[in-house]
Length: 614
Image (cartoon, rainbow, N blue to C red):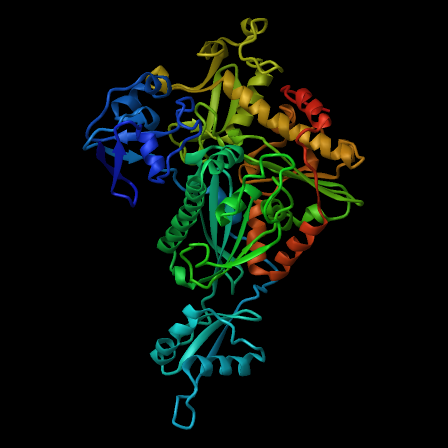
């Protein structure tokens, strides 16, 4: 039996649910964005929805993950709700936040050479003596003005010619590359030329709107990657895609919707129309690249981890289902290897200091962490499966860096002080808060170096206020960062959260040590360690050294550069030579596969401790 469920807060007004499926199943089947970190097992507590009409009684799953305040407000876990006819639900969409925008706005480049320009022409009107077709007349005049052969275009543009050339008395503007006419517009539109740079992250997606004439970033918007409904990391999504062609198509459609949603948001928040965006650059890891373009990912997760295509790709926006000018030029950064994608090349282009003389290590922190090492003799790159902890996923009260997220923590004898984005009541903790919080807990003695909360040998020596915040939880102890009106609403770090961070930071540290050793160097030989990623901007060198995220080096050698991958996409958007640099680098960089490496495994086991690691 099919039941109708009404939705609040999305374009889809009504969905149908079957009697033998959960609300989560129905939402996923209808390709709607809902957090599904644990794939419906009920262990993550992230798939929150609000029931507004028919409110089902809370289940055991709900009571484990939700506070009494949440339950009274009608909030439930989608994986625990059995649909009923007439239900109305509000989806817990993730807000755009300002961290990514703050890291990119104000960026300027010294060179503007997008490889696209606008050319204004005035055509002679047809006569009996000059019976050339409208498109022929347009192409001939453009060839004359530019000195190029620009007759090549797509049929959609050619079809527009009769209306466009007559709309402004045979005056029009053509948008052209070296070899192609991308679009024609009535009148003189030379003052408006725009592009978009996209960073497809495993967890979140960001789009920057760029003025290609002024070289400035106008607006940046970001949101959660809708693919998270099908798994939190690349391996789970590859597994889902391999189950059927329909699943693979669902993942492709999910990222298309995410990007198009952000593009529509840009149009609403600026005076730029989507039809005016004529160029796009895209960075993303190899899995995101393949899922977005519809390439087969079945061989990425099995030895020898082979991708379909690493070369740079160019499409029209229409071919990719993007809501830009249909013939907008879309450039995808090339991939280096199976799990080292175009986002790594974007990060290198976006932080050119990594290519300067000396030994430089770039760490692009995210769900999938990429490492790039440049020495005088070689350039090497690898990937480590850090997991989603840095993005707040897999953490009991983890969340992305938006309003309500604890982003900084300090402990003292008097208790805990939290800095919250938006200066409001905390609703969770983001990656930077998690790292600083665990470092503070380690220094205060709340956690030992093995990661255990409330070491019996030391807890009695803690200040009373810190002792009070340690309490038993489901598996081990937990530590209260912020109290709420009822205990279930308290923001805590539990034993599993610490283990998740240990796994993530251990993988990064082990990857660094392995790569440095393969290059014949020691960590002390590094001239700089460059941290890329939006959340890395908010990390403190002392915190990441204290917990062993990176091996012990002088803190002054550590530099955060913001979201360098997205920065690289913007640079390539504005200057075609930057994209050419990425293509050159992809041919030169040696890809290192850490899977099965005994060296990596040994380093990983020793990198789990919460202490400075040599």
